[in-house]
Amino acid sequence: DNGSSDACGVSTTVLNTTSFDCSSVGANTVTLVVTDVNGNVDSATTVVTVVDSINPVVVTKDTTLYLDASGNAGITAADIDNRSTDACGIASTVLNTTSFDCSSVGANTVTLVVTDVNGNVDSANATVTVSDTIIPTIVCPRDTTICSTTFTFTPPVGQDNCGIQSVVQTSGIPSGGNYPVGTTTNTFVVTDVNGNVDSCSFTVTREPFPTVASAGLDDNICVNTYTLNGNTPIVGNGLWTSPNADVTILSPTSPTSNITLDANVRGEKTLIWTISNGVCVSSIDTVLITYDEEPTSAIAGSGQILCEEYQTTLSANTPSIGIGTWSVFNGTGSFNNANDPAAIVSGLSDNSNRFVWTISNGTCVDSRDTVHMGVAKNPIVSVGPDQTIFEDDGTELEAIVSFSPTDTTAQNSFTYQWTPSIMVEEPFMAKTRTSSFLEDSEQFAVRVVSAQNCVGGDNLLVTVNSMITLSSAFTPDGDGINDLWLIKNIDDESVASHKVIIFNGAGAEVFSSTNFKGWDGRYNGEDLPGGVSYYYSVEITRTNGDTEVQTGIVSILR
Image 1 (cartoon, one colour):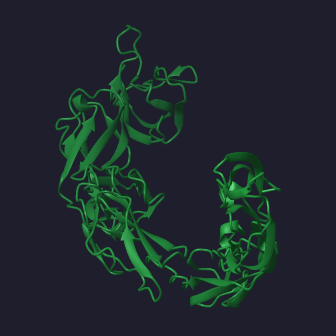
Image 2 (tube, helix red, strand yellow):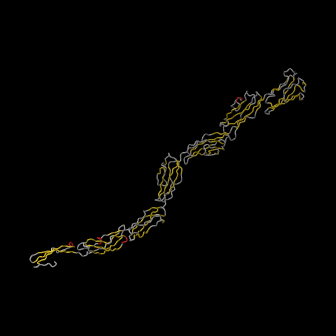
Image 3 (spheres, helix red, strand yellow):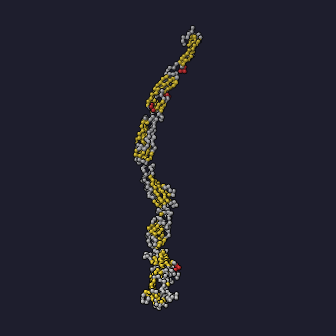
């Protein structure tokens, strides 16, 4: 009411709105009704402006934030507002800092600004404590087993949301160090920049080197079972294996395991003895077991009887399996190549020599055969000296056999053959005669064969001389009959030279000739007296050197 009046006086003044609240803030039209004492009424309007000028009441609270794994944390105004109030209501709350990171670790002052619905503003501070409780991560190498004395690894470095302060190995042996046999635990502790700690560990187990494997010596066998001879491991475990499918190992982990072999598959068998210990390089050794085949059956060849030959060629079979070797059983002999089936053996002794052909193959039983090489003497044959006979006389031929004092062969088992056979009566006998066909000189040979087929022989020349025939008288009377004293066959081809001498009764030489063609009974051109005896001497030298002298009496008949 701003001085309302009435002539008679105002009885009442009534305002239609007298109460206002926050909803009335701003311009409000109100009506004032004035009634006078007489009941007259009038009204007028006016504007009532409602103003809110009271600041809100800001209440904050301190809080603690924890960084996440990425090193960040965040808050809102609601996290700080501790029930701030305002008469008309709060329009907004705004926090000046809402995001925090690793650099914010610790106490941080933040301001909460509160604005009411009518624009009144007030603020208050609060403390936000940022904390890093995320434990750093560290990953160690996996547990490792080694065999060498040194071990190198990459030390762990660790990771953290806010950063690593340090990584320290607190136990164990550093990378590249010497590790003892056994298990070593390596521990690493990681600390981040805010003091959070974690650790990791891994073990390094060093295993000792296995015992050096020894599979034993190579061997040859001829049976299908065998006991192996590997060494017993001091460190590690042994195992027998074989690449040969025909080998059965009865106890593969036993150093002295028995094995069985397929009897139909001969040859070399490889056995491998492996000693292993963990990750260490295994020690391996091999042994070669040769399953020998039975040697070829020995055949020494046919025996021989040699006739004064002290060298010969043997003729054994060639082994398809094994190696053949010649040896002396009795007698003597030297081989040019003792392993040659057709070896030449020399230096044989008289009589018996026995040689053994042995075929050997590894440990199998040898196969042997014996051959006899006898050395017999050739018969020593003599038929005597050359003979000279007169035709029609014939002669006896005889082969006489003699022996060396060391000859033990049968002395009566001989065969004989005379040649030319037609010129003897018994060509197959030791003793025979020349036949009636013999008229001229002939070379006779005898071949003597012993029971051992050794051959001897001899020959002789039988010279057949024509008989020198001298008459005892002749008649040199000129009648052409018996006028000359002749000597028959003096000019035979078997006669090389001759000399004829005739003496008278007084011993005087009356005729002499070395080319005798006959004597006519004359001396110095004069007839010698008849009825008288004269004496002759005829000397004949044969072509073979024999000399004959005939003497006698010849008479001249007139």
